Length: 315
Image (cartoon, rainbow, N blue to C red; front, top):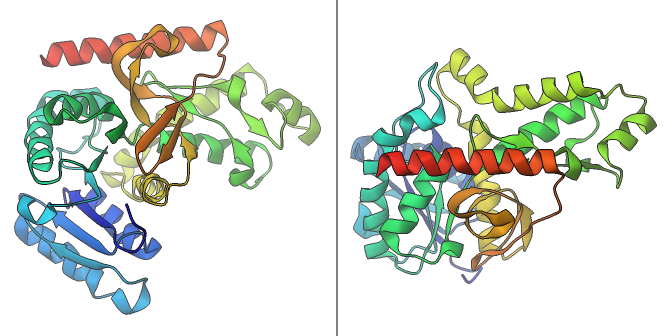
């Protein structure tokens, strides 16, 4: 993907898709952005609204279009799907969104057979597997947004515990499903080269089991809390999806907790879930498998089992 000309298509012009398109323009990542939606008027309105701010942003051409207009995309982001309603889990969306994903992925495979596909639609782990099956793309080129946002929420909440420490200086991952079975890998948390317990002693922070549980629950349930208040989440996922895109098109070799297809890692296979992966212009360049303690490994296995059962139920 040459840096001088990047074409990105966003399928789904709802709150999430439009926010991603807007953020892509602000970051100047793409030279050409195409918005596709079953509601053509909505896509056109969003494209017009963003385009009118062009004098204040880095140069990007943004327009509405149909699937033929996405031809030759370097990267396609699929956000299309029904929204999560208050009281619903992400897995509750599976039957409603699978048909939408199959249609969108099939169209993308036809018009951009060499593209990288970033799946954002929920439940993202199962939808990523569906997209891979439909497109026949190599697993490295079908990536789920996974727990990149969850990990960002986790780091933010940890920063509050550490007295408002810059969250960019706190590293840690949420692993497994992007959903109720996700879990924080406490063994991988790093603050200035220190593990979380050592950092707590240095900063004089009480960091006991109750504190860990509170942070884990707040991270897991963050989307529910937002949906209850404003009916949808879109700013956080807009920023996190754009960060994934940036790493891919700029060949950064950055490490993020994206949802990726497992082929035996930790003894797991034929399932998408989030682990730390290296992202570059070819997609997922490497899946990292750091040593996990038995309790975290058990949680990863439980998450994988839940996702496999959900996919089998879908058929």
